[in-house]
Image (cartoon, rainbow, N blue to C red; front, side, top):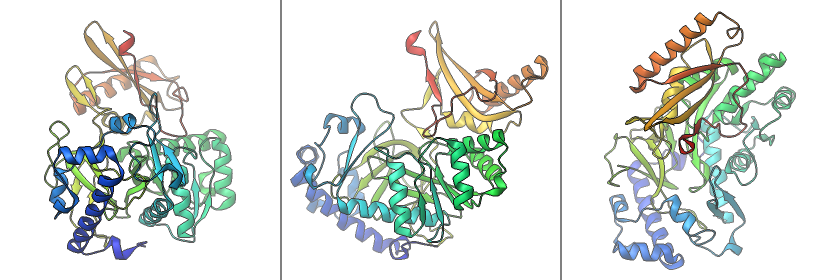
Length: 433
């Protein structure tokens, strides 16, 4: 099913013309209504009338998360706050959060892009949408909620936590689509196994998983253990929330809804726009939002774009699964690595569970990385020699994958903290050394 075939399957050239017109209108509005953008555009000698093609994006100023914090709370709003109908804020930040405002038109756009997302995951109006994303200032819960209602789904707004109750509701209400972080999906499976709940009693067919990086190995684990089709979804508070891009049933990249959010890939060091197919930092420009449209927002997410039409019939560009972020990239003894690379290794080792943390310390002038991973139930009581062999196997495979030697520590099952939202994968103790 394709929710909005007119836009999702539009001729590429026709969509390009639409995007240029909407971009020009957005720049004109920001030039009048947002002093910060007016100054940046003036510094770049850009006016709305100068924009004749999408190539002109490269002449527009970047926007960063620091710019949003500097203009907290309403400095980048394109309408007065009393014309907004909702506020959301980014999670996981220190100090002042990043505030995003929504006009009623923005809420409508958001619901439409989430309906597209649900359809990408095989959903339709007959589905029961079990929404275990967090509600509140976090965009996940309410984003999926409104989109599910627009599609006509029966939405179960259960939010995160109380996993045993989640299982009961999925069984009793006939939930067919699960929405949550991938790490929480695995937590649900663990809880079912611990309390002896037969997952065959629930009717799930697919899952919409996002809000944190996850690997292909994590997908395989979720699909095998839950018996569903697992789909990657992508979004961020600064752009709109979930509903920016979604993986269809072909699972060949995430379709970006670029009639609303225009993507670019840039070199994260130079800011230069990279050609199609090159991997770099993902940048978005909002071209339909009324309250809080951003120009060339630097997401810090690392990916690449594919502009070839998909076998599903959608003609929108696709982004590769995010492999990491420029600002959560770990540099260990001169080697760059992302937590997702470690996860990919761990998920291929049968003797351990898909629950881990990376602990960074500093000894003298050298950074050290310890990988703590839960051993599978029944293994921890085995002979010490066997456990040491598992640790050595993990060390060798990680070394082969990322190019450095790390410490590995097997821990007992259930000892790494579980999170209903984003999993905390990295503990950085280097500042304490």
